Image (cartoon, rainbow, N blue to C red):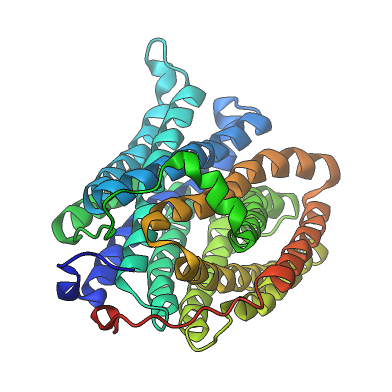
Length: 419
């Protein structure tokens, strides 16, 4: 992957440090939503189905925006689109705070404001994620791509648990509005960091491939479909778990001291995502040492499946924390190898758009997750719904075995991107 005549001057460590700082602060804003929004239904008079729609709106918008974002980034470079993305993403939590008081304003509905704010977050995050993937792919080689992708995803993952902890604890101590204002503040910081230090990295091509050609590009390479499919399953299962764990904890009376199910669920999410951050860093680096990165995802998917079973079968505080940690470790073990492998096999003029395709699959899973999880959990119980999700994980493991284990990408020779 090249970046033109200026590429030798790019320091990979500087680029990744810039991205890590931005995605960390942006992740805080995203994490606040999960321990807080699910409990707002009774307070605002919103049905469980509509709560699921609100939680899924950001994923739906990002689902639509991913490939256009990739097209824009492939064409004009990553800096300006990412700064816009960070800014839009950072403003969204202030919309959550406004929604709490929407009943005091004429012609404004709380649910509508939440939907709009979540849509803004989804649009901004599409440019942030695709831009980060495109940037790292262009400045790394086959030998170090997994490590740097792992660092970028690790920064994002560490921001998310920070947000879940802050969201749960601040909401318990100071109220929901305070939690949303904290999230918005971190989002604005992310935009300022991006504007101050993010370099511009663009593809070394004269004409980016058209979006109309993208279905044919994907169809020609079944590896892309498999990578996307595994990402769909992982995101579907994980977001379903995160969006319902607060209700699960309340149903089973799981508490920590005087904290309610909101604070408890924040701690559970934090444990899960911290485990995810650790495995994200380790598996990305480890996959660089293997000629077949797909091997790393097999134990990761096994950890995800076992963790879901533990949560569903043993609904106590300590076993749920253990299960959430195993789930997080499994999720973290899949993302860097899959993203690095996608970067290895992507044509140079389609890195942004194929990164968007990867995100489309993941966001489709994240969008459907809460919509399915809330009604299904209410109908059959969240315990059984978590157990049934293990079947999907096993299907993803089969897809990896069939299509990705024999992928052997030869190292590329570009000294400008060695670490």
